[in-house]
Length: 175
Image (cartoon, rainbow, N blue to C red; front, side):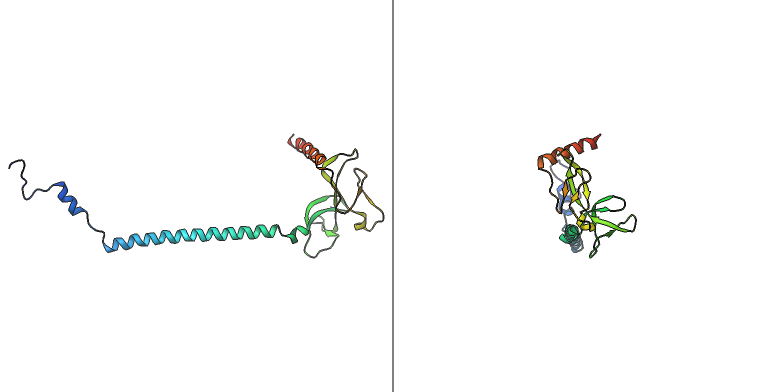
């Protein structure tokens, strides 16, 4: 056979390529579509879960930061032991004296913070003082550390003094 002619039984690569390319069957099309729908459903479920988690997180955060909870959180001091609880959360509707969780006795009273020292500087952390009015005692309340009068919503030292006290407390905590 001459080199330029082909026999009827022989085939070229191009002839086989025409036969190999077939259109996908109906079953193959529906299988691909169902996978796409499955991925879309999984994506939507993931988005719904993320949205639900976000709503739950913001709800819990707003509950923790609610004004009602903040109003019931305060520094208190035990009149028997002198121990201060800086972030005591009073039970809803409770009045002082509150019950000490460590002793079980109603010996906790709201306290005011005094950030002053005897030499007129600021200190951190403060001394917590129970006002005489809350204990039913007459006269002004004096801080046992600095001797200054302590009152309801006791004023803090100026910011510059508080910054110095904070810096000093931080440098001693690092040691």
